[in-house]
Amino acid sequence: MNRILVIEDETDIADLIALHLQRDGFSPILAHDGVTGLALAKKEAPALILLDLMLPGMDGVRVFKELRRDARTLETPVIMLTARAQTEDRVAGLELGADDYVTKPFSPKELLLRIKSVLKRTVSHSPRESLTTGPVRFDSTSLQCYADNEPLDLTPTEFKLLQHLTAHPDTPCDRTQLLRSVWGYSDESNTRTLDTHIKRLRLKLGPHADRLETARGTGYLWRTGPQQAMEGMLPG
Image 1 (cartoon, rainbow, N blue to C red):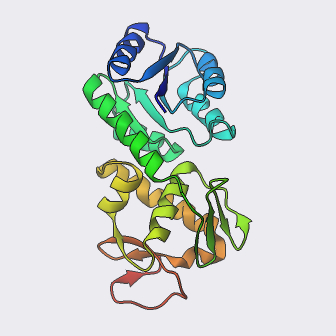
Image 2 (cartoon, helix red, strand yellow; image 1 turned 30 degrees about the horizontal axis):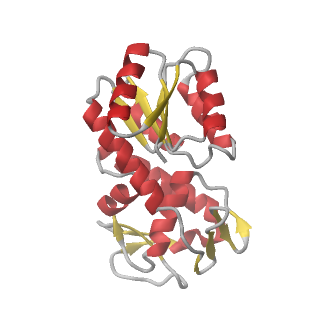
Image 3 (cartoon, rainbow, N blue to C red; image 1 turned 180 degrees about the vertical axis):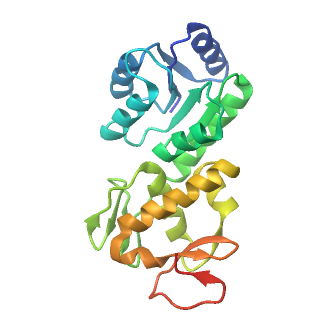
C-alpha cells in the first residue's frame, strides 16, 4: 500500500515529490513519459498514481483512459497533476473518473494530505461483504455491481457513489456528504461533477433509474422499494 507511481516529465518536480513521499514513508516509482508510466502502472501495481496531464509520447488523458481499460489498473486511484487551473479543466479531469486533481504549483504537504485522503477513502469504500439492496448487488470478490444479476459497467467513482447511496437506503444524502465521501472534499466544481455522475448512473441503471431520486434542496437518495410520492422529493 505504500508504493506511489509518479508520472511527471519535469524531473525537478518528480524528484521533489519523491523526496517528500520517502520522508513520509512511501516508496516512490518515477516515470518521465506516458508510455513508460503506463507500463510501470501495469507491472508494479502501485497503491496510487500521480499523473501529470502534459506528458511526452502519450498525454495524461490517454494514459488515464488506458489505465481504466486494463483490469490490473482499473481500480487504482489516480490524482491528476497539471498547470491548468481553470475550473473547466478540473471538472473534465474529475468527470473522466480521477480521484482528485491538483494544480501546479502545489504545496508538497497538501499533496501528501490529498494522497492519504484518497488512499483512506479507497480502503473505506472497498466492500468487505456482499451487499444487496433491491435489484442491486455488490460483489465483494470481484468489486462488481449487478442489477437484476446483470453486470453494470460502472467507473470506480460511479461504483463508490452508488455504493454510498445504497448503504444509506431511503435516506436523503446531502451534496456535501456525498462529495466528501466519494471525492474527499467539496467545492463548486465537484458539485457539478456530482450531478453528471448521477445522470450517468441513472442511464446505466435503466429500468431502476427512478430509485435514484433527487431530494429537493438536499441531494440524492436511493429508494429500496417502489417509488413513492414524498414531500420535497423529485423524480429527476
